[in-house]
Length: 69
Image 1 (cartoon, rainbow, N blue to C red):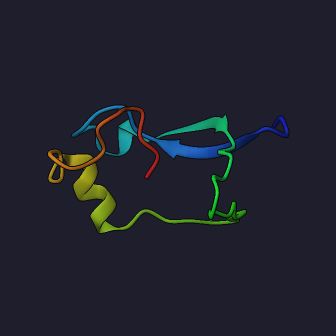
Image 2: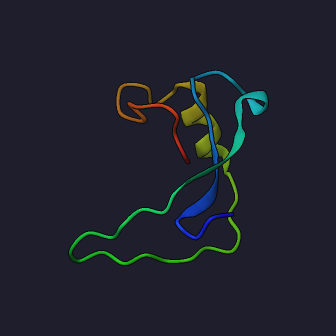
């Protein structure tokens, strides 16, 4: 893995379920003023993330795909 990339799980559409979750290497974001960048060693997806992927919050988020929960 290159130094300027990080691993992430993302999905590219609503209602894709587990089959639509993909591991990807994406650029590390640059923190803006008054922000910090934190290295996360582990994360999980919770029931709210599944509902967002199903499209329950479609009018609000995410608006662009692929989306990293």
